[in-house]
Image (cartoon, rainbow, N blue to C red; front, side, top):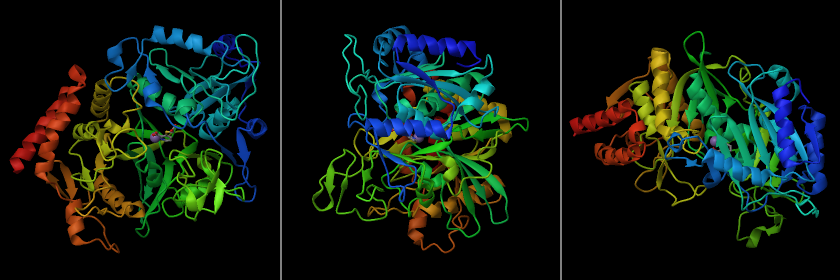
Length: 601
Ligand code: O2Y
Ligand code: MN
């Protein structure tokens, strides 16, 4: 029970529907975290890792049918279909509520319903917002305790009548069936044929059924902090974005904060924790996935990371690609769907040590290195780790006032055409760049590898309303902020030469691009105007100590007019789907691009 009558009433209503055996309120304490781990160990949901190798850490293996976010089972249930727009699955809210009523009825029989009051952002920050997740999964509770701020301090801020976003989650595997028969629990309960990840933008609710995994079940993350928050942000005049936030310090000690939107699986966590190769430059992490930005008294946008942990992809993460992520998960971590070595440690593909002769793979089966035909870890295997354990976490990462954002980067995977970096001509042109953002598909997403998929502002799976209205919101924000808005850049670390090699080394060398961005914000670094934006002059990028062939640099900064002219009709087709909701100013931006390209030929 809390002091908040509406909250207590809602908890009682959901309990009446789901019929759990007991209700437990989460206080956010270490003892309660250990209680969740203990419950998972007892039911076989989790395996304890070696205290020597990974202190206070567990491994969890999911059902093979429940391994990732499910975009085709994710619904925006707005009153009007047109408000969900062409990029979302829409469902009628009344019909969906009826369906959910059927699914949730009795779904927690034989289980405990946990009440998880959580703050997205530092507790009490005026950029933060509160949610309450009701879930029947100890795995979800433990993850939420790492990923968000949970417990009594949140209820204290909520007081007697504070606002919270209600989030209901069930794995959909009751232990007592309707006919009264009982069944034993299983390591990863779910209802994989009946997943529904549903959002109600008008009433700002989330109902998630059938999956226990990541973004489907940790409802503070994608469901609240992006889909519902994007609606709140539109209505209240702020921004909820799929962006990392980093703090960049120059050798002279000057600081700028940069937010960056890249599609999923394009290296956001690596950039947020990067170790610069340029002497004297420092990158520190404020957040690796989501940014909430509001105007403050100075007229500038200030951002918080609404999360408190990382839910990062394990495969490919190692001491070369991201030593700070490796250090962050050294202890007090939850690993999901990775391999387990005989000495009780974790292993995954491209970790920086060879596979032992044998291990237990993510399916829980014996895996023998020399004749293995499948991967030891699932490609979407994850680590959950507290952000406070990151060696380069910024000292101000929990500042309730947020950090002033100086620059926004857009980017994606583009093997041709897109230069290493460019700066937009204006906020409006930057909005155009974000709205036409596209990335080549990786093996992680459905579809042909290498195919270009538009992912405006990296929000395609996460915008809770019509994308055309979302573009308008960006323009409105720009109108409000005027010349105090962050500068907007577009970066591409993935351009390839004719022979297929990557032209840019990436990782710590990306600091050279960040330095140019930093200096542009101060009106210092040189740029040339091209039809697609301002590009660094050949001498403006600091390439000292980097053995980059001259022809590679030329190609990285080349603007191929023919390539871009071919893109214009592709952009027009992309824009056409937004119909009358496409802001005229963006259609004008596209016309102006075409004009500039024609003038240049
Ligand atoms: O597969 C999932 O449920 C996780 S998706 C995810 C997790 C952390 C950060 N970003 C993402 C994403 O898909 O963008
Ligand atoms: Mn993400």
